[in-house]
Length: 272
Image (cartoon, rainbow, N blue to C red; front, side, top):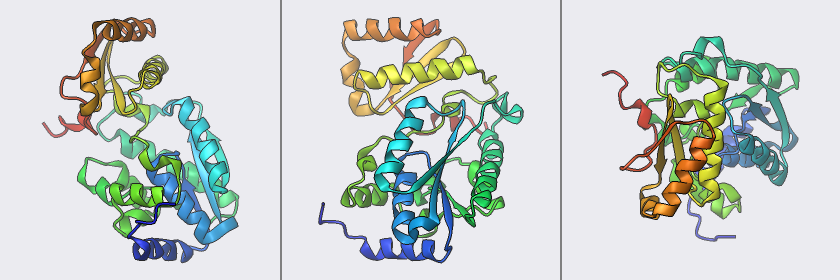
């Protein structure tokens, strides 16, 4: 165990705030934030903590399987809610899509939690999330979803350091988000596009691009890789392989974003 963790008092503040709730369900994606929160909740409340994962068309299959393994390694009880269809309210991907989607998804999580005897629902929003366009956070506030990492001012860096200290394998996991974030606002959402995006990103990860986004602009795939990984793309054979493979999934054109991956890059035109 790493012995350089310097936020013991902040961690105690977090677990104390969770203990006050007495009975919680964590909205659990298996990402850095929700995994750390699920770990803290399980340590604070034991059997009175539950992890709930939503299995929907917007979530890659590999993330669902990884969430199962992570919950098992933490020791927390884990439930999966299956959502089969694309919500009609967001089918055209409006700019408030995240708000509309979270309102529906978290209501479903709350209903499941209540039916299983868990009083509150928590999510892994952290203090850094206040710095980006996050309409979904309004939905969480309206539903009284608890965000203890945000309230106790845990940044992403804090969470990664604490996760490493506690031996969580997600401590260096790249940030991920639902597949809807790969589609520009006001573009029709289809299962076909979601599947193309998922296959393309799984392929890119298989050739060792861990932090990657494949943005879907109709028939065009725009690939974003971490800035430090861009130099790996300066290889003609690799580029041919990427182009041929991603086109085989249904895209007609494949481009590389020269500036690299940027979180929330499709939000830059909001308000223009």
